[in-house]
Each structure stands twice: as structure tokens, then as C-alpha cells.
Length: 274
Image (tube, rainbow, N blue to C red):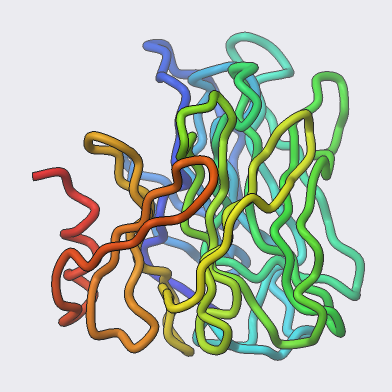
């Protein structure tokens, strides 16, 4: 199981000043906004009711039923859980979704982003099928519902042990709609794919080969989206020789080298605006 200090899911909604009560979580130890994963938790995010809807998400129910091991071990997650503010203004509780035996969540951590502009975050993550491989999935916190609702998904890659590595979500072309970027099979196809989330549906709008963000066995995913003057997707070249920045203008992708790839810090530094 991937252990140690885990990455926070990105919270794109402004924090409210007043915190709220949070229920205990047996698999997690919290202290001063930092945390260490304990047995039973694959991924997590900091809880706390700071906005309407979802404020944090994490994985539970570790399972070995999908022995791919691309993220360093053969343990994945069977349950996605998220804190929601729906119960009351000063209290929060968890909503969840538990997968059937054919699926697992094959990801580092869930990602939270307001994809439709309603002020409530959706959850973006990777779901993998035992024979069909990975797909990007989006879950929504529907007021009044007791479980997270699957609202959109990309097609399965189509074969077991084929994976995709998420990059991030942003309005890449300035049209008012959010695009989600990931690398399709970062060890094989090494293809950047861009999907637009609009009217509750995902539609692929661009793709480009020759890029990657993960090596087999890493328990982390490199790169992301930086927004300096314009949003740029930061990845590595397919041969890991250079750091690449890619822009999407609504029709085509344009990439440029921004420096050599030496180690993990090369991509982490490229995400900063200088």
C-alpha cells in the first residue's frame, strides 16, 4: 500500500473563516492540517466544511483484486469517500461510493474541482476494470443523495493493466468550460488527451503523442497545470529528456521544451511562475 504523507486534493473553492465539526476517521490521523496515512487508507484529503458541497476526498477499502501494481504495489482502493456540507451549516458528514468487484480506484488521490461553475466541487479520479483497463470518472455531490453520484466517464482504454495518469483540470482555452488533461498509458502510448466537461458530459477535444508524466512503480505522478499568463500543461517528453509545456487554444495543442529533465524537481520547478 502507498503510505506516508499523501498529497492534498486541489480545493478550488475559497475557504470560509469558520471551521466545523468533523466526524472521526479511524484510518486517518490529523494534526495541524497535516496527516499521515494509516492502514486502511490509500488516499485522502484534508476534511473541514469550508464551502458548500464537498470539501475533501480520500480512498478507503484497500484491495488486491486488481494486481496491476503500476503505482508501486498491488493494493488499490474499493471505496471513494468525501466530506460534504449538506448535513448542516456547522457540521459535515461523509458521502461515498463503493465499487463492485470488477473495479478499483487506481489513483494517487482524488482531485476536487468545480467543473460546472455551480460553486460545488466534483471529484475526478481513475477507475479501472479487471478486463477493460482504466477510465477517467467524475462523481458529484447531489444534495439530498446519500452517495456520490457518477455523472461522467471516459471510455475504458480497453484492456486490463492499461492505465491513465491524471494531470489536472482548468479552463485551458478560455471558453468558460473546464478541460481535464491526462496522459493515456504513460509507459506505452504516452499520449496527452484533453477532455472538456460540458453539460454534464465529457468530450475529447484534443490529443498529442510524445508526452508522459509517470514511470512504472512510482507512487506519485509528476507535472500538472500552471497558470501564469495562460494555462500550460507541464509534462515530460516521452523519452524523459526534456520538460514540456503544452497550450490548448480550443482547436490544437502546441508544445515547447522549457528545459532539460534531470529529476523529479525539474517538473516541480516548471510548475512555478517565475
